[in-house]
Picture (cartoon, rainbow, N blue to C red):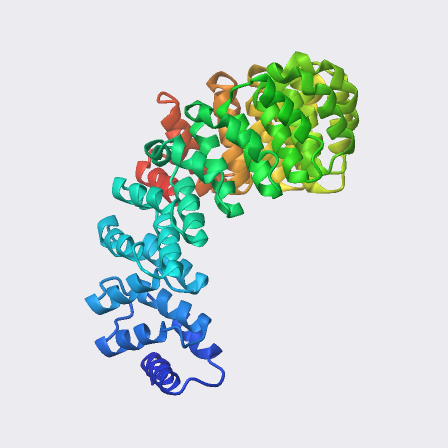
Length: 499
């Protein structure tokens, strides 16, 4: 007897019983709902049960599962559509997130269908509902002129939660939406009593860039805010606006001594954005590199790198940072040293030891650092070629990427790259292919031809081999190795598309 219809009937009878008298363990029921497949058809009664299961009186996990099941139906009746639209302003954030996911990823309703109900709820007498409506407009990416205008007005709402979600949604909508709002409403929001509103307003002004330069005095005041997140947002915004005025540079340098790490890191990041115009802050950045927490040290190293020659006094601290336990810090330091002094011996001497680290993540980070530095020194190329045979696939992948950036100087690594292309897993194959294409046909054609010619007949018909040859053929139009497949173009194409 077929068990599928019986299982389906059990699921709906259990749901009907639970909704009549909610009690007991519904984990099995929730699992059955989550396992509903898109091809399963639902009766009108079953859809009504799912809509009923989304009501606030029931368990949150059951409500979320019901939303996901509704999303799988596809063509929903009007009553079910109205159910989902109403849930966009639900008190439960997991439910709202499930609805957003359903609308964006599964149902893909047109913006107009979602916009009007939310704009109406944005006028609700209930402040909490207005706040959720503002949140939903941003989460659903509804950045039409009408929505942007409504959210701009919501920045003046008497309820803090509405102003918070309005400012957050405007930031999430990107620069185009912010430009239509303009700097003035955001400058007014910098004085809001709600800390998160000030935070989002500052971020928005930073995204506006030079168009928000009139906000600099207000942002300098926000640098003294009682909330660390607001001071950090103000610091980042000053860097985003990009006006290296003396008072701006002085405030950011002073922020390097803030009691909160997030503020210090944001200040360092903005000083780096000003490049050598912020050279007076080199001494303070050197202190941050010696004494700061991980994220502060990393931001300080990156900032010094952007200052290039002006940061030469910081070379001792950057060289010392190459021994940092946090790989993000020593990678930022290695990049900074390369920008300040491209042939600094300290870089290679330290990374050489990292290549022997027992931790594959550290070896991968070292290889990645060498690739970003891009030096053509023979010992670096040899080290990267050796890393192509590392036991970790991520190290092999990063080594292939790094060698591809070095051009002709890495031609000796072609045979090993070809072996990776033909034999390794797909991520390493992809990196090897990119490297070979960057190295050029003159180095690759004969070596690839020879590698396949001397391989067993069974290997020549493997999908990976066909994949390599067909892609190379598409990139280099006159590179013809079809004779390895006895002229069977259909087999080649099939292998290419199935690989």
